[in-house]
Image (cartoon, rainbow, N blue to C red):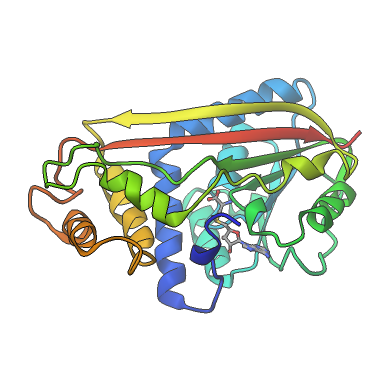
Length: 278
Ligand SMILES: C[S@@+](CC[C@H](N)C(=O)[O-])C[C@H]1O[C@@H](n2cnc3c(N)ncnc32)[C@H](O)[C@@H]1O
């Protein structure tokens, strides 16, 4: 399964804190994408906007808060296996003034679900590919949704790209080799299981993200934190020259480092499936 080796949900606090920072940066840098998706959902739900929302594998609440902003009369339940993520989400809810509209529930979606329904909309962003048994999860989603309710699944097609092909560091094509070493295919763990679980696929849409220089500071930090996560799993998979160059890019505060280069981009594609419980 894609990214599996990077997504252990151990009690490693430093790792969880780094993941939380990455998720927050993702939300900040990709706010236009989130706004586009929620606007699309608003169109799709028309005169019956969701009032009760469930965010599966909520992380730090990127989807929860984007949906609460778009659907002003809605409440959300954010569900995650990680108490760290949920605590972080709770602080953000207070900062954003929506604490009264969010309930954080700690649970392992792969095991028994707490009683959560009925809800109007279930959101699962970059979380379905973590599930060892998608049919089990989809059966639970089906039960939690009211008839007519929507399940929205979003996944990254591949890890985001940041670097130009020619870095000027004698290592052209470095990022392509990084991706090849990670052996990731599109993370689409759920869509094949939607119909068998009883859902009707209403729509599938790809959102292309292509941010170019001048990038805001958050995007540079996003590149740095993302590449650091990848780097942690590359020992022995790339040659020493590539690894040293990657280290210069992510750790150096000189002109070659990602925090200071003027040739970075943020390129990614996210696919979103919308399915309905008939
Ligand atoms: C890549 S993050 C995505 C977070 C958020 N949905 C977003 O789009 O920013 C995946 C999240 O799924 C959670 N997760 C992974 N396996 C889980 C499980 N079995 N039950 C509940 N949550 C899980 C992780 O703790 C993590 O917060």
